[in-house]
Length: 359
Image (cartoon, rainbow, N blue to C red; front, side, top):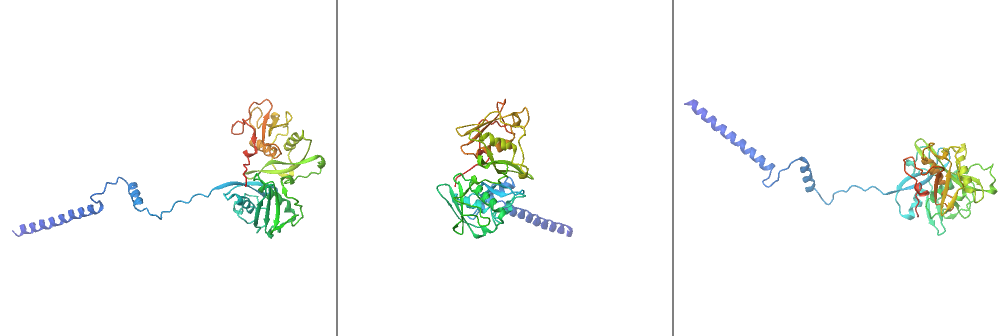
């Protein structure tokens, strides 16, 4: 009888324990899944719902990338030549673009972390661009601070050339006049280079030795030659004096371009020395027609013209007054293509390599 009582008591206790367990499970289910809740298939749904519920007016939008535009800045390369490099600079209001470009020519300025190997800025450290004024005749008046005068005499022409070519990349700028702290400069402050009515591309850049040239019967022409600094490929403008009358001038320029400016300039010679013109150049409606011998081709028997050869020709010839585009042909070749196999089906303009804009 005592054993039965103990057994019965144990069964009662067990029943209470089991009842408590079932009630606990039900309570957890009720907390985790409300009666009206829809089933969730995966964690992505949970994250999505949590995000929607947690949205607020203070949500941070991702920052938009600043708009930039390519700018040609003329700097000094490892060989001491003034040459351009293209940089993506933040877009400025039209009247600020030229000032921005000049500020990037200052040593120790914003250009410093972007300089390619071997290149350096040209304007003395601390130089400030105080004001710019573009006049209707294409003259841009640049007012600089007194720090501008802190340069060596041998750098004077490089400074003038770099500033002039940087500013004249804008198609409505023809020449540059200088002021320092508001005072007009008739000559440069260190070596006395005359500024006259303004400095322009006609004054030349990286001028080569002209001892063997008759300056009376010749004219200065700026030619573009490719150069390399490690993996960096760029073009060096070199002003050479070319002889020839109005009818022969284009042929004389092509001949000088093929010959090159000499070894002292450290540029790359991209022409086969046997290359020549197969016919006299013709300028018609702004298009200069140049027909070359087959030595112009990158590979004999193939209608491919080297990209560097084409850019050298077009950059140089479109600098000439009245030449808007160049139609390059090779004798006995029906259609020329570039290194990527793309057909030259129309004359090539300078804008192909150097897009321009107005201030």
